[in-house]
Length: 587
Image (cartoon, rainbow, N blue to C red; front, top):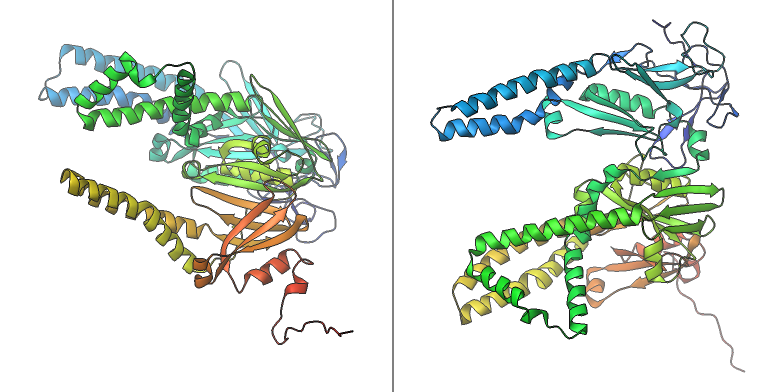
């Protein structure tokens, strides 16, 4: 057992560029530090081997003792038995409790499989241990006999294997992400899976996985690992992100899961129409529509929707793989950010740091519900608006925590709101009323009126459809209006203008204030009556202009002047002064 940890050299806090958190490094002679590992001098080598003046810290909770996984891991491996046991229970209920000979054989097979799986799980669980411990520059543990105790660094060590022992170590200052994943069975048992990896561990080879830990233990270990990410290592790491195929689960949560099917169908129809073939007159198409209308619609309509979703999901997965194969986002030098991706059509987009004016964090509704987001660059020199949309992608649909980290890596500073909720100014309540009224006028009223008119003219069934449609769409519209209003916000965070809006796609913009070239104030008769104005920041990058909708008309000029000084000052009238026109003398 290693010696107890000793206090470290005092240090100060540092913000980590390109990270969604604030970590602490240490400097000799700086007050207010936390404890450190024993034998750590005032310098240690970083990832490139160059001496670093930041010694590796260590918390009081850190220990070099080996720890085991939670014993409930054995039950997780037996989750597959739920299906056969459930089938056996349904069979017993259907037969009135009489279990046939075949069912007894099934039960015996389940029992034998349980014994085998439990034994295999025990063999995997028993020798698997992990710890956070100092490791010397020569690769040996700092507490090992003969180890070089000159310049140790903290590592996460995981050893496993019964016959063939395997030890894997990841220095804590190289860890970029720590994910906790829990399936319904994991949540039922109160455990979770912890995965720790570096920015270059998208292929999974340099990732450490611990399955499974008790949720409180996993939370403590996650905080412990993230607390020691090295600030200078993050800043000097050229690789911002690589593809992780676990992100594939976010592919169906995009527009293409439904819209892609109709886009493909429309394209096929146009091709057939171009060569003189009328698709609606094809025999198999007419037969399909005839059988569809003659069958039970309460079965065929849901089945058709499921078929569309299944085809859309397959298409979305294929499109995701084709677009983001071998994806890598990296700084090739201090002034150049490069995005490489593509399977059949490879793409390599270069963005100069001088032209990178900001970052857009986009969260479409379905993707946001699944906890994902994507990142786009606000940069000049990427072509017209259509080309910019194709070339500005920095990150495919991925976990929101990863999106925040990548956005910070592109900005070379933490993305606003990544370390703590962004302090954005709310918008007036009248903006909520406008969204409710617009939804009711454009979504609820037209559909209800059409169904009611058709019902009065043809069949009373459509009258029932009209009131059901009105009730359902009203509830949906009110919910969406509330969500859209809660997403509104604007503010200033250091050198960045921060604006957030949208419900079908919630966009959070971090735009360099110095890049704003002009302001546009837009109103309509209805917005003027409500005392609101839409503010648009004109910038020679991205989509050329970014809107901040429905600000209070009295506050918008002051906010614009504070966000981008030097543009509006000569047009502002401050309280206590009167407008005076320059005198003109007649000749």
